[in-house]
Image 1 (tube, helix red, strand yellow):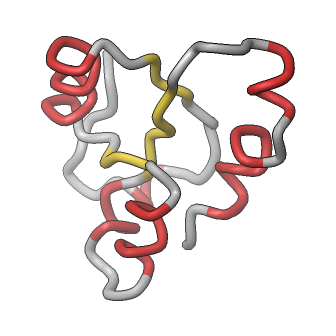
Image 2 (cartoon, helix red, strand yellow; image 1 turned 180 degrees about the vertical axis):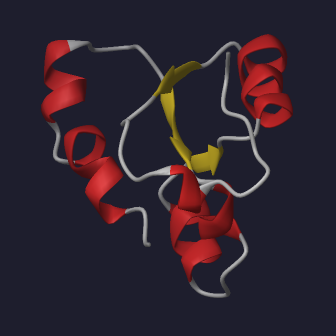
Length: 84
């Protein structure tokens, strides 16, 4: 349930080499931010909650690009709707 699988491409240095100067944030499933320890790791790695209101704010207020790694299933998002 940790963010690590989602962030390999982002923090492995590949993204920065292919797309220099494009600042991004990675969307993480909301439950990852509910678990103590997991939340801190995700924030440390610049991940943000995948809730629509959070994602929209990251785009509109900060002008950052979002990375989405489609993994998991509906059980990781109980009652939540990702960007649509």
